[in-house]
Image (cartoon, rainbow, N blue to C red; front, top):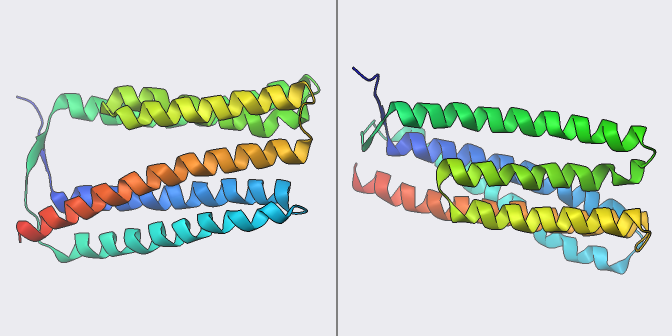
Length: 203
């Protein structure tokens, strides 16, 4: 007999909240990187959009966590063995992402291209969305993977061939990746709001 457990709307809401907090963190990191590149440029004022989104993600994530603890448990679907395998693969993807970043940093540094560190990190982050799209059957992940990978590859080309200064390269990477994590955070926010409506309807 399969070992099955029940997934509750409040559990999914809690998971979405955790994801939003992660997107808030990553958006913050990429925004800081973009600011470092733009700190002497008047264009840095445009970065104010990202702190606003970070505040929204954090605020709603905390609300979702509070709501998920308020409602009693209500089951809506069953988690199969396939779902459990998917969750395990999800962990493998993130472990692989971390290892990929470390390996990438070491390679470009040892080859004498330290300016490629940020673009390579962005490349690994972008590539990790592809298996996520396959695992969760979400077209959005493929779009974000393509966007992030193109941004990273462009950054590598700009830096390697000296088409842009280092500060402009990291500004380009920072803004491009912050857009990706912000879009992801917004999609999570929308799913969270829908899940909260479902939780309200069941209680």
